[in-house]
Length: 510
Ligand code: HEM
Image (cartoon, rainbow, N blue to C red):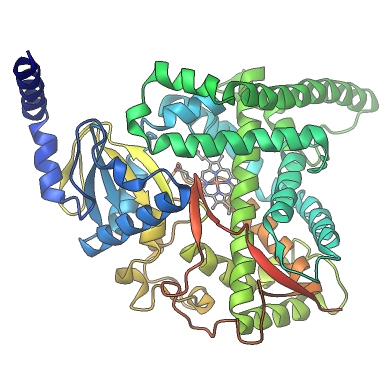
């Protein structure tokens, strides 16, 4: 009986291998690095481990191996073949050619709906077209005061935190979240209030659970997923989120109706600064008005996409400034030159003049991109510029983190922190820098993000000098310095975050 069972498994495995022989041939051609042997059901996914720090460490290791082997590597993830990419030319080609999100995103879709980030291409395309005008320069300019007010509140909240080390994350997260809510919904929220806290916690729990789930392909089965989702309390959390957003949508719809009636009566034009929600309510998808579900999905994803990503990037930037005091001094001098000596937030016209600050943010996002990887799917066989043909059904993981440290584009000092790379001469190869991904499915909010991050940093640095946590006179690094032998310790949470919640020491400049 035992022998019969064993023989059946072997026969089934051999049939499976024969049916998928083209995939196995491709895997061999692309090599899988030193990621360990591929096991049935698990593939090589077991090497990532379950601890978020381990996952990030192994993702980085996987990325380095990809670069060492020419920028494209294959790996078995459960029964699927994943192609990992750290070559800029190949990444650029794939991000522009393969617009479909990978199958693993269908679980994210279950949580966040069919909003642009997770939607299949046929749903995404008309939505992206409908959403894009909300990011016009004119509309974004109307958000400048939101960032200015928010960054003043950020500076105030940090007052009195100069005596000991401070974990920046809750402060930065609150700044970005409040700004994201105001620009998305047109309402002012207090990140400390009970309702908001419960919304934020629910969001956090959902993303953390989803991050852990994505790296366990053996759990990727709909029935199992739905059960786990329920048992881990995610259903309740999702209800909290949906209720929070639905209430705002209902309230805002009525407000808009009243406002339009009032303006029509007074003969006033129907324009002015518009929150994303208001913009969506006045727009249409393929000629039809947004439904309530579409309004909820699109606004929820704006809050999700706008808040944590920018908070992570700005927090990493502060840590880098603490580590590299002479970079911080240059940034500070520039802020003084552009804004003068009295404390105030930069205006929309002044932001482009903060060039060294921008270079510092960009260099931070090169070494520590908020989103370390993006996943796409091959829908029809596609031949890479290198001549290799990827087969239908393969998953694609573009490792932004590995690509950003690929010496082929960034030189021998790829791991060094040097904001000067982004000053003066253009980048040697544009596609080698993609913190916001690239192509038509790249980030729609990169200009919004830059405005928000520059405003927050300019305000913060006018008031405080930042020092490394546990500061002693020689705890700063002298730039240029190697971010491999002295790396920041990070973990994977869909985004890449610092393990100590971005701890630094603040010293008042007043
Ligand atoms: C530092 C901040 C940010 C970073 C690093 C970032 C990064 C990214 C990346 C890498 C993608 C592509 C994801 C993929 O292909 O799977 C993306 C997509 C997206 N981002 Fe951002 N983002 C940031 C800020 C924002 C902001 C502020 C908004 C909105 C206000 C936003 C809205 C979106 C949306 C809607 C998408 C989906 C685009 C589509 O599929 O059409 N992002 N972002």
